[in-house]
Image (cartoon, rainbow, N blue to C red; front, side, top):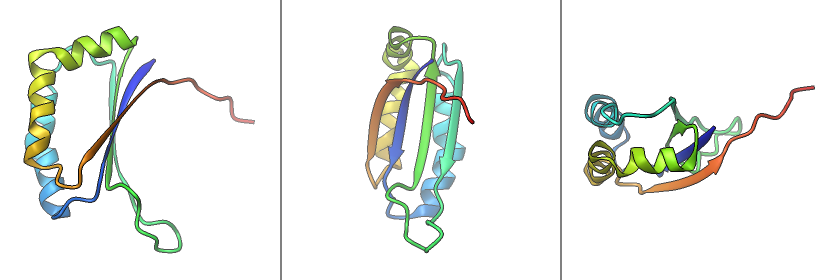
Length: 105
């Protein structure tokens, strides 16, 4: 599968970010048609208490890069991208790549 990983930096107000993402951003992004999978993760400090380098991660999956580009270039994809200015005060990094599974031994 092909995916884009979005890493969100630590926002100015963590509670406001979390509420906005759940209540506003997800409903906007859910209008994107063509995704095969979507996961999110809020990062915790390391076992020694070191804060994470990023606050939050979203991963959006499609069958191919071309399919992902269609999703992101759609009206709903453009609206979701424009919405970042409303809550991602810590910035957002987009990483694109083909995912492959490594066997566990």
